[in-house]
Amino acid sequence: MRTVDLGVIVLYLVGITWFGAQFRKGQHSLRDYFLGGQTSPWWAIAFTIVSAETSTLTVIGTPALSFGGNLGFLQVVFGYLLARMVISFLFLPHYFKGDLFTAYELMQRRFGVRLRKLTAGLFLVLRALAEGVRVFAISIVISVILGTGEMLSIGVIVALTLFYTFHGGMTAVIWTDVVQMVLYIAGALVSLVVMLGMIPEGWPYVLQMAGEAGKLKLFDFHFEMSMKFFSTTYSFWAGVLGGCFLTTASHGTEQMLVQRLLSARNQRDARTALFASWAVIDRKS
Image (cartoon, rainbow, N blue to C red; front, side, top):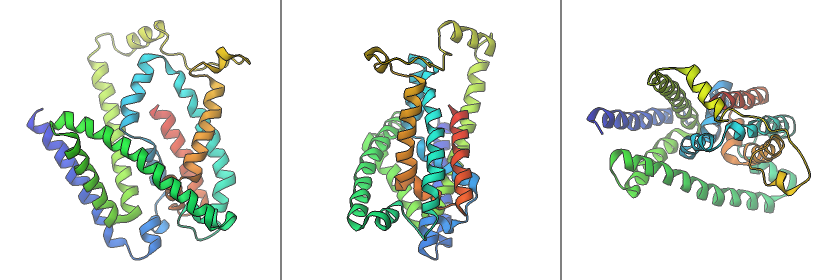
């Protein structure tokens, strides 16, 4: 790897950590620390939601899904939209009724302390396991790029992230997510332009070859009560149902995403951010 590449990576890591740590000056209360003072605009909340949904596994795995099959896996996105409707009209009104800092305070209010402790405990355990996989995945990428071992990469990533999130609170999380999403989208667009420029025939040729190989097939509306249908990897009905249940659980009950919604200025902004995040996911996909 060239020195300039290494310099860009180091500059990014130092820059994003410094940027996030600057928000420590605005931490004057629990509301400031855990909800960013509920001052973030809806578009920033939308970006941080998408950022929370996206990881190294997404970047590495999604192209592989498309290359190995077709665009059928994108049918799940319509389930994401349905789930956002459910969350907007069933969950958000209750979250914004009281002075809540976590999703589990609503659990306590409706079902008691025991269920709050159970759901909060499950979230901590399962989220730790999930994030462990994600951090390990990105450590592999970094170790390949920088030539470091996985353990050192994990240590650097965790240390820098903990530093700015500890000092800057939710505000730091939101705005560093915004910066990273802008870089992520810009990088994807630049990569697309560069790769297309390397193909002499250009975009029409890509579409022609992909179409002939069946890579552009998106929808499968077929339905029948048979084992063959239920063993199909991707279908519209499976995408809508599975995507709806998955997103209702993750965006409607998990603290990682509910906290972002609670950080909006009001219920209307939270709803707007939720649907805007779907639009970003749809375009990104």
